[in-house]
Image (cartoon, rainbow, N blue to C red; front, side):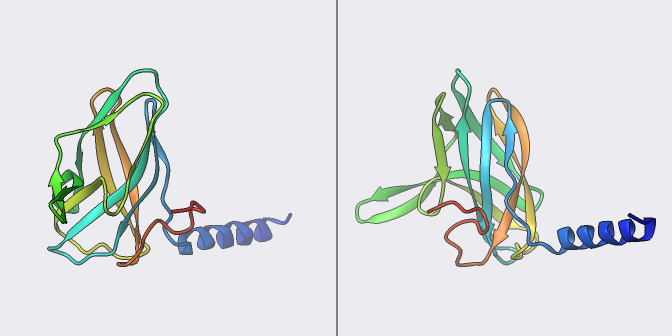
Length: 160
């Protein structure tokens, strides 16, 4: 292939990659596998929520003990609990990850609460978040920002 054609092909491929919408990227921290990380679009000074799936492929238990993100004043681990006839969000100090188990953070259940957003979460962008595990240590993930009403990550091919 002539040099000019090769450069044109590489330029076209790079352009297509940069124009492609942000997709959730899987990550790992030791034996902990993190998949389908996503969030919904939200305004600055507001609140966002992060969703993902954690799988402990190791033989020992672990715990998600914290999370942080530069785009939020603070990040808390949250769950929903039933209080009479009302579902309420409550912070939890940690989330247990037994060996061989999978845990889904999803709307209406466990989630990362992004409090005090310093910038808007815009659909199509990615938001870096650091997860802190008791044994596996820290890992940075990228939440793909979906539409404000999204029920799950786009383009993952996973059922919900």
